Length: 80
Length: 419
View 1 (tube, chains in turn yellow, purple):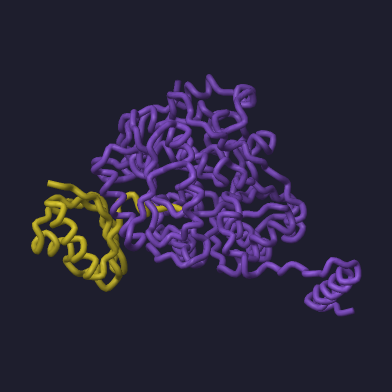
View 2: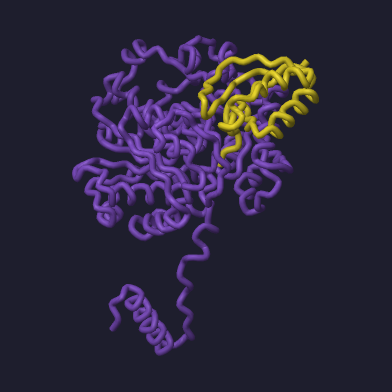
């Protein structure tokens, strides 16, 4: 089993959508929220995903397709 | 011996031992090095520092390392009074902290020198990073010096010209096909999987501390005094927060007297998530897709953006985002007035100074320090098309004089003076 820490950033139109619940329901991935800040207009959630690496990657791809930005927890790693 | 005590989560305050970890197991907040300041205060003095080497390692007591430094001579770069640039902008006490003159021509040598030292201390055999330029150059150079293997991840579409400054040191360069986001994600996964010292992932808490030395140096070079105003380019936000931390530490340790210090953040308009949040009066950073010539500042989702905003607000500084045109103008102005050819990030800083000066944001007697963090030869393409062509002459006096008279006329006409 692999684990991956990620940050989801939600645009205003997706704040009310149960994206994380669907991720856990549609993919064989355990979601574990550690920190979040969600208001009516925006939101981010830092969470851990646990499952097979391929399933996690499929899940992340689906989340991105919904319009959510997915980043590694440390922020951008590539620097100038 | 080091005075570093532990790693502390910047969010929930949990403490961790000094190991190659970067994130709090509980809340996934970032970790930062803490020190035994009481013991440090008894040990450190201006004289002790002044007797040290002319590199960042004169501040070794304030850095989290135990072993022999991996030292290629980073730091103790000139702090130059900038009267001609100051006059052009209307600033009486302007200084340039010229970090162009580091061994690989950018401030990254400060952070990588600490990261490489720590990597060797932890027993890693590989130093890794993902970079389009400055960081890659520095990691490759320090790994060579330390006898470590260097692994440098670059985007596959990076021009070869940018790669030479890293390739010469003999690293393994890995060109990743995909977007910057793909490179970020791949590196974050690789860092979990392999036992490497990834400078800005698992050794980031130590790496970031290297930037404090810029703050120490400026104070020491001003005669152990904190300036009134620092204007700093912001990418991940780490440099910005650590310059502030460094100056605060000197005050806690009784080496300088604390005084109000404004920290101003300069970003390129095409990638300005910190300034954008500051303008909204929010602490919520909205990630951006970078689109600017200031590639060394092109971090759309800055790791320390939130903490940079806190420093910006706490210190009463300004957020300034400048256009690509202003950046080029800033690079030229700095070069033409002070003889310093900075990369695009330097143009960002000078353009921000100009904006603030025009808006009357500086008090007449303020001591202002502009942080110039990398050398211009790294981003030549930014100015290549805008610089004047040479005056071409035949090898005769007559031809020379005729050409110069023509040029003089053109210059005066461009200034609206005519003959």
